[in-house]
Length: 344
Image 1 (cartoon, rainbow, N blue to C red):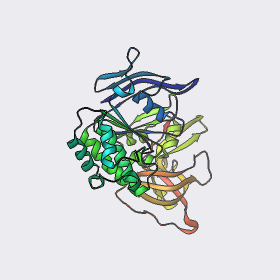
Image 2: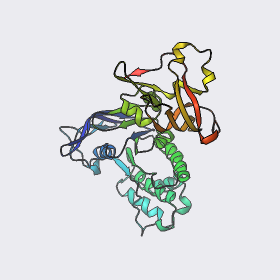
Image 3: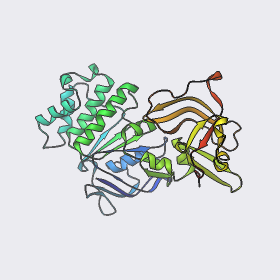
Image 4: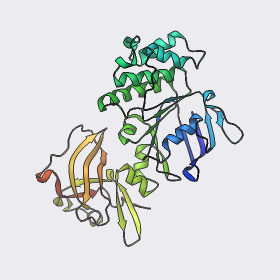
């Protein structure tokens, strides 16, 4: 298990993260989600022992890697690192590249390399050179090389960004099984909410300094810490309340799309909170209902974003077909119950 306590990271006077604490359990992938410059990769470098301007405590399986009194060099931390670029040795075969990682672990034997080749489904390519491999195969070799050192923790920094979507999805499914089988904690840095939904049991949204939140996707969507986190995830409705000078939030899973006639007969407490919207291209993905565009027809303080999540579904196809002008005009988001809002 990985434990991070009160991590603070800076570049000179620019403070990226302040007082971040989180725990990563073995056998799962924990996502680090946020925009560029928020400190995601810097957090991985801090854990790996490469970040100089950082403070805080790091424990891996109850072993202290870093604290005020202690600092273990990167080579002694037992951490595997996989980057977006594969960095394979072009003059080495697949088996030789993976075996290179074994040099950092005296207990790794030839049988372990063969087991990794089988686990990563590249045993038939053991004698091939990197130039003859597909992008997905090259990334599998990079993963194998990191795992050959028998790390106690695996760090992934945007490892799927250079792969096409089909290759990425297959590798993600396989990686989830591998991490569970090896029962080690794993952290994934990504810009992509899709990657988090595909891979991660937990995620930490980092928007900079103290603006972060850790939990399951459902927990964060249900109750985000700030309007900025809600806006970044694009899974809820944000409304400016001019009466109270506050911002109100509700997860889109608390609403259902409907025509004006759908409001007939509903209680006033629900009808007054219905929001007029225009919807486009409603479909499902990862068991969740999405729409590419959603916005208030007269703005009225409603934040406008693309690619909203409307909530869980069992469907795996488009739910509604576009009407004229390729959109759904004169629709409403109708609350499922009277009290759906939380104020920031």
